[in-house]
Length: 78
Image 1: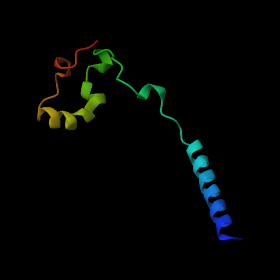
Image 2: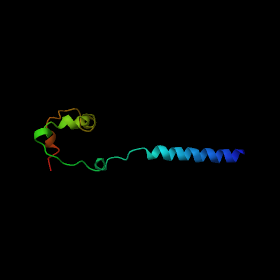
Image 3: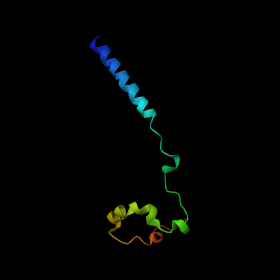
Image 4: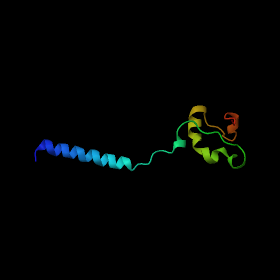
């Protein structure tokens, strides 16, 4: 087998394996992209940091360290 035939076969196999692996990857959920969906701020949603606790690092960097008990002062419900 010549070297060029071997390289072509190897490239085709690599491409086929790549497509096979890519086909097995689940797409993102349709609701994950875009701006966040507004929701109620009472009942089970009263504790903002219960679900959105990962904001403290970015808020510390942008606004300085602070308390995050009053999220609705900057983020009014819509």
